[in-house]
Image (cartoon, rainbow, N blue to C red):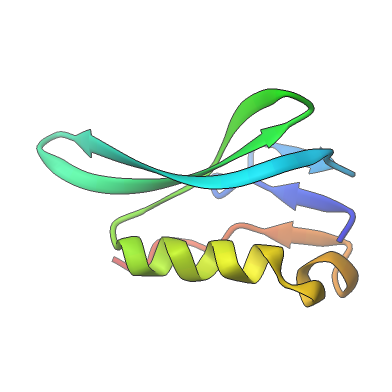
Length: 82
């Protein structure tokens, strides 16, 4: 993996220096959502937003797997399945 593309497809982090991935629970319009965020080059970055915590956790686990870092030149954050 050389790059990460955000869920809204507006930003690609090329060869990111990722320190950590983490999940942040947010209340948006009286609805709980789960943000996958990353610390990239010492800055907090939003990568994607999901309605189910389990889906967000599964995506984070996929992102830290060995295949994530070796198979694809760009990892595109998946859409929310809602």
